[in-house]
Length: 198
Image 1 (cartoon, rainbow, N blue to C red):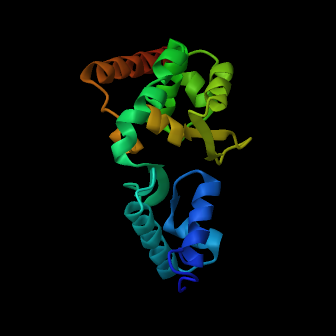
Image 2: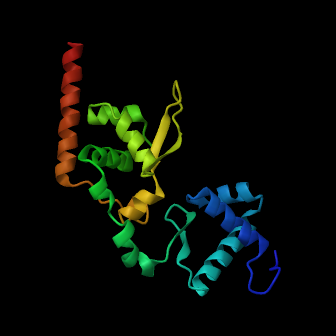
Image 3: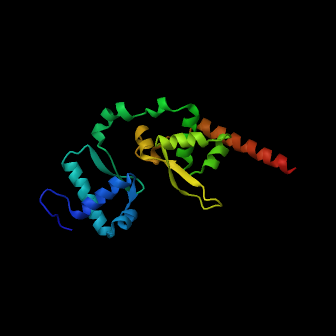
């Protein structure tokens, strides 16, 4: 769609921009088509236009394409250092060890239910999951297709930003020590299971 006035974005681009802003989460092309009633080519043109306008005019935010093909708004990369003093890694000081442990489980195992979190931790995690949701580090990303349809949790954009990650793919790999610990726990669980069967 042609631009209405010089200097303004096209109606399609403004529509896509509005949807990304309102949803406040990364959306892929298919979702954007569905939510705007635009076809794929129109959405692609709109995304290019938004990106060009934000870059050319030196906005504080930019349109970012993630490794999974989704799009979202993020701070301009040249501002990260200045923003980090206000937003970056505050999570380390505000959360208890149990909350950080739970957040790590969600980050590495998402999507995951609260019951699955409880099984990994060995204790109930209701209050911690509620706290992490209130502080917007995790969010409901769907429901598991089993009896009761429990909520599935995943990490949020705020989690990525405060830990300085571009995407979940940037999470550090589990160390050899962690892998050995997990293997040992799994081995102990298998031994217990075998003992119960005897």
